[in-house]
Amino acid sequence: MNATKEQLRALLANIRRAQEKHKAILARTLHDDISQKLTALSIELSLLQRRLGSHPESAKVGELVELSSQASASVRQLSNGLRSKVLDAFGLMAALKHECQQAALLCERSVEFLCDAGDPKMEASVADEVFGLFQEALALAMRSSPSGKIKVTVSTPEDCLRFSLDCPRFLVTGDPLGWLDVRERALSLNGKATLQKSKRGSGLLVLEMPLKKPDPTQS
Image (cartoon, rainbow, N blue to C red; front, side, top):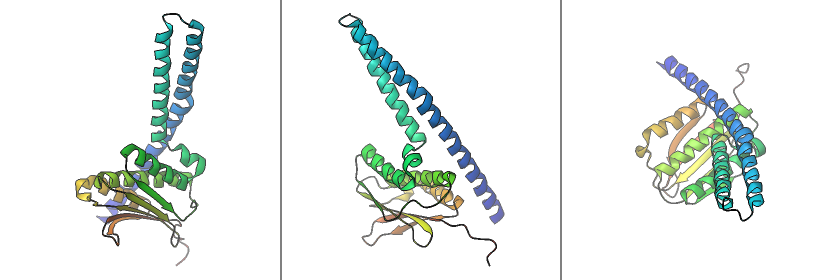
């Protein structure tokens, strides 16, 4: 039974890695190809509108300029949703902070980000998986605690990357499948996800992942 579980976890980890790779390719295509073409189209339409001057069709071209600009913004948003540009440019901690800021804006609620650690040393593919896990955990916390402030704390105690999401009235029973997926994703990274209680009685969703793999040559 345990061997079967480990095989399933390994299979799920491979599927997630393939998904992250596919998402990265799709995001790059959206950003480097489609978004740039839409931007070029918007520029050409703007130039056409200027040349038309007071011509009756100028207003219609102006509408097309606005539509192309909106389409370009939507493509950029979709690309960023598939793959964090902040993660690529500035590292994991900056990407986590940016994700909290975006979640706060999207859901119109307070999400505080506290971090006393720099970027841990890990392969880019692992950082992708850790970031994806954090995204899922934060989304679960937002769904399971529908109101109030969420406090995210990141630390690295004893070669371990630790995320703590402090949520008022955390109700994991409202999304058991989401919680199960977070747990399994943490296990696939040789880590763990637990539910605890803070000193003030609020719910804590804690993710812990080792930064160093055990050396098999050492007993």
